[in-house]
Image (cartoon, rainbow, N blue to C red; front, side, top):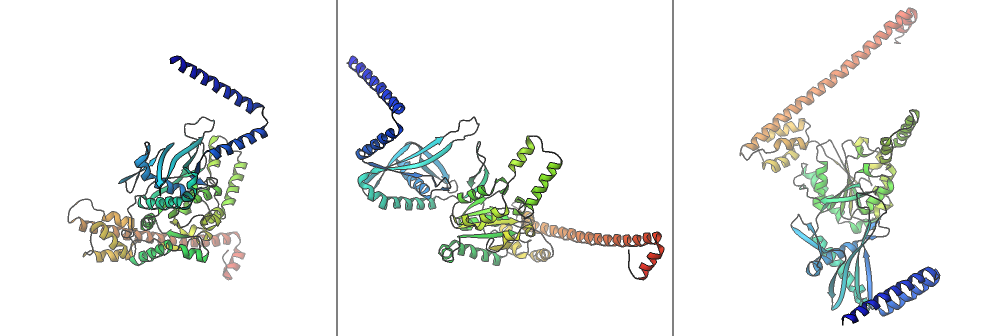
Length: 512
């Protein structure tokens, strides 16, 4: 018996060696055209004998430009199946860290059944690693799902089953949705392009906690609801389904809080776009395409992000001329500075907002925030690009009542009238007002103490503002007197140099 097994393994080894030798001779000596024909007809023969069909669903569509909605829907659909059948699983936390979503690991296969039809799903990935040393992963990873089913069930699968999977996957995604805050940063390893990374968006701000006049809040909420329900209307008028908001005002007036309140109100993801890390206009366009529907794209302090005025090219040219006059820059630092400088232009940003590529996807809100609206190029903030301009102003009495209710749970108080009068006379941001209303203990009288502290802060701010105004007017008077003295000194100097001409000028009422 043992001898028979030994002979069997020996014959099997000899056969494998013979097959490998024949295959090597075939690949080396047969003409490539003949090899192609043999492979082609061999594949047809195997397909004729193999009764199963495979459908692949890649993670990205096109040239890895946009993430496939089908891939995401299938991933959500298989999460329930995976938890019941798969042996190797991956877990992710969603819904405010209160539940787990399980999905099957790579190279795992699970079985599904639909109307009596049995089929198989598998998760796969392929990697192509570059031949270079790096401390970071530089693999180009391709992820995809594969569906396998018998040929006789083709109509059922392509007709109703795939539609069922997409519908169920989207419903599961809606139930498990966790809003995300995205930011763009440098890619891993040797990848020079920027990529989106995200964390859970857990900002608690709402319109109910926003320090702003109630009438203005109702107007903003109405505008947001109209936009989110306006898919058919935007298609009817031939515009991309997007809307621009410009939030402007002094620091501390709640511009970032407004963005968070908008995201929580609409249940949208937030993309915080940092322009200084974007290499050029092409990369900016790619980042736009990678954003999801139902999202808010925010560029904060856009007046400080990049020089997007028409004078930018002149400044770069002048900088280049200055370097040429002083000699070429030496050292790795100068080269790195040149390489890292963003080449995003005003034209590229305008195309990002309302160019052809802005119509890829829908239900997006683009928000610019700035402390100095007068510094922005008019083309950037005109109506149609920034559709709604919202001024975030200093705290007035209506905004104070919201803060008093939120921070102190006070609807009315004898000190509120004095605070209202002071707020009308003094410019104080909602952030500064809120800081004075912050409770430091559980004492019942702490609320009144906070109001008194706010009154003192407002009086101090009012006195400081008065002092600044007095100093400003004093400086203007001093400058005026200085100019008068310079004129008188000029006349005296002219008289000493040429008394006759100076007398004629003085008689004619002209001062040299």
